[in-house]
Amino acid sequence: MIADHDFHDTAVVLPVSVRDLLPGDLPECTWAGSATHLRQVERELARAAAGEVDYLAVCTPRDVPVAIGGIDYQVTKGAGTVWQLAVLPALQSCGLGTLLVRAAERRISSRGLHRAELAVEEDNPRARALYERLGYVACGRQPDAWDEEAPDGSIRRHETVCVLMRREL
Image (cartoon, rainbow, N blue to C red; front, side):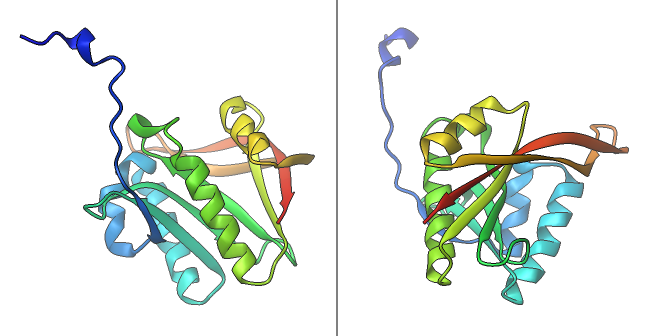
């Protein structure tokens, strides 16, 4: 018999790939947010078809998204704004966020742009530490707000303050 403690140092290596997020992927992305949030992501995918944004997915070998995030090219002239990053909670701290940010930066560079920007909530030090580790520098603060869906389906306004960060590519 093998005890659970025999596996505490076991590493599992799983190849992943990065591709465009597709509308058909959204049913697999319920871990990324509420139904309201996923409807908003679906609207962003329509903007991707128009070239205004890119929306990326990090996928397993079975082509299931485990991290997603967007790049908006309409927010700041000359920059790509990285936003709505999410990693499947069970796979956080495995390097998928880093992979997703770097893939977003490559997309930004491929458009001839030389700066990536993002905003991170002040009360999210874990994400901010990731961005700083990746070379992003704080350059300001601003209030932000969006609608959130509660577990009972009601909608409430989430208000916060975000740290603005940027990185030259």
